[in-house]
Image (cartoon, rainbow, N blue to C red; front, top):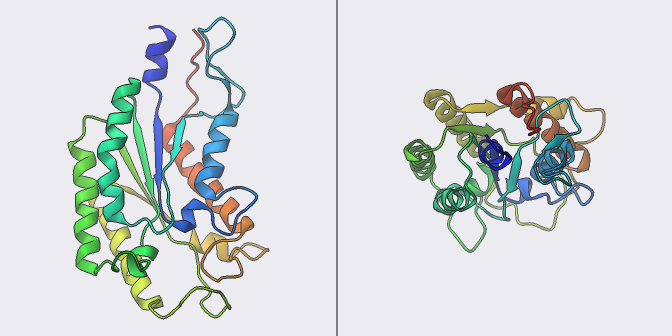
Length: 238
């Protein structure tokens, strides 16, 4: 097997989410998804050495190709619509290894921006089924990761309108996502309790987006789960 075949067999990680994942409140690291992407890059010294044949790792843990697809206001129907493009990109680049798809959802679905209506609970359930269904029908070995929402503090002043936010409704949406993950073989990654126990404030001034400390903690928790699922490093030296 040459190096190109080895690259094609490497795992890929696709991350989706709204402004919480995109990194609002974390000017240093760009959000938890971007922090994971940078970590994965740093784990690999280079995809190719000077002879063009080797992939050298500078970490005892695996590095994988990671793509941060998050956007402000992204909701599950948007994510479902993105999947065909993700599959096409993999096909064009010749990737056929394991596909990890990580999603943080539930906030913008509940409190959608003005350009689109909020997603009803039935709409959320339908979108979750569509998301899982499309991935299961793909030809890839898919591992689905559903990341819990971080804690919020709706009593803090912020320039955004709080009128449509309901803590009870947010909890219902999160429970729905957790139930779907557990019932369909996905992995639900809890983060909120761990963030509440941090010695520093994990929530930014607006009460919604995690602070730099919070985003870093989320990245570490999610990365730990991904490392657990990836298993030992694969030596890709030719």
